[in-house]
Image 1 (tube, helix red, strand yellow):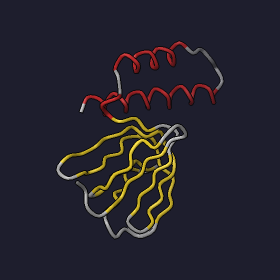
Image 2: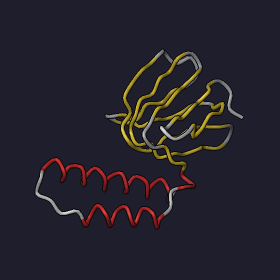
Image 3: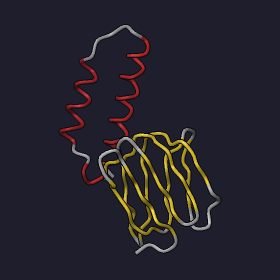
Length: 131
């Protein structure tokens, strides 16, 4: 069991995770952010990517789709549109998501950027699922 921090991961649908942890590594806009016990108070935007929470001797991994992280005292709260545990990332669902993105046809630059980011998110989820 973790000792030192309490991590809560919240999505619009549910509380995905709420357990004591040793530390957490979060995706940020320019790399990663590690939070250990006695971290300074923090409120920050997150990028999409892999969230890793050390719980005892194991690492719990999630795909998070951006959001906000707040560190206050020994509590870390993550608010994200999506937070998917690594063991719930299914290859067939990722294949469908990727195919749907690739089928979209447009010349609109904003839409093309949305497709590009969507494909990046699928690639990150595949990487998390394979580890």
